Length: 209
Image 1: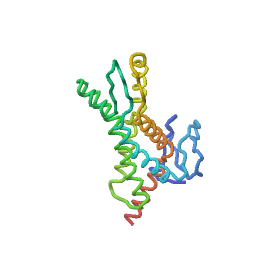
Image 2: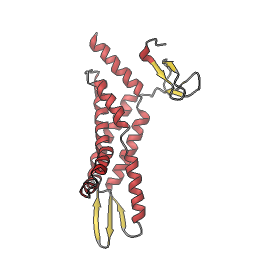
Image 3: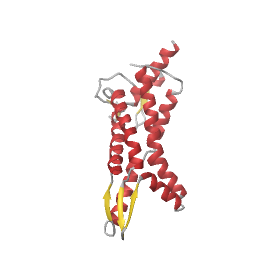
Image 4: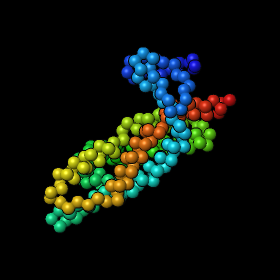
């Protein structure tokens, strides 16, 4: 069992501080007081997450720039992309809404995948830099701001409302956006943040020794 204070974890249900122990992969550590799951080691988290992150980066550009929907209303046909949607919202005068959509649907996924890719590549190469823990902290913060699912839900609501008055066809960008959302969810599932922090601490110790 680890004895230092940094190896304590807090139960999210009852706030009990519990000393972390090494447990087998794919098993869960539970709070001894309330039984709430504390942490679960993931198998091959670095390689699996890195593959998903690279996939997300490859899907991001077509998801942003390729047509998501093609709408025809009274003979007027328009192709809508995620980037053009931000521009149109900005041009309509809704500057803060445009900023929020840009930040949560474009900037946050790009920054999130780029930062995590940098961290994982450093771990794979066994290279430590002082900025590595800072980058991973930023990833954790950015992860909470990515809202592709909210954007997709709002888009589907708009499509349902326009369905009776417009001819709507899906574009390749929509499938890339759905793939990007699925990839983001899988990254959350496969990433073991505790293991990543352990890797970063090990690299730091080797660098200082």
